[in-house]
Amino acid sequence: TKAQPGTVSVDPSVIPLGSKLYVASTDGSPDYGYATALDTGGAIKGKRIDLFIGDAVGVSNFGIRQVKVYILE
Image (tube, rainbow, N blue to C red; front, side, top):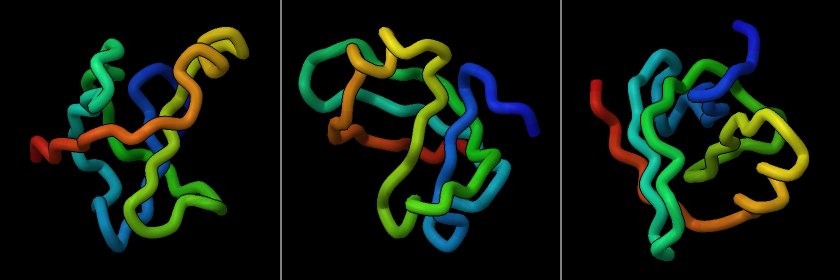
């Protein structure tokens, strides 16, 4: 799968690949929104996810933060 907006890397022992998700901010900043667990990252273990963000400025603005992940299906 090609990484694109809405693609999330997960630990498949925690969130099954193919799961539809909603990623909500916990600090009042805008939510990431709807996403699909389509990848496994080398450093993604346990209750961590990696969100696809298309450009360096967006990555810098989003940063590393705690989020709440809702598994929709």
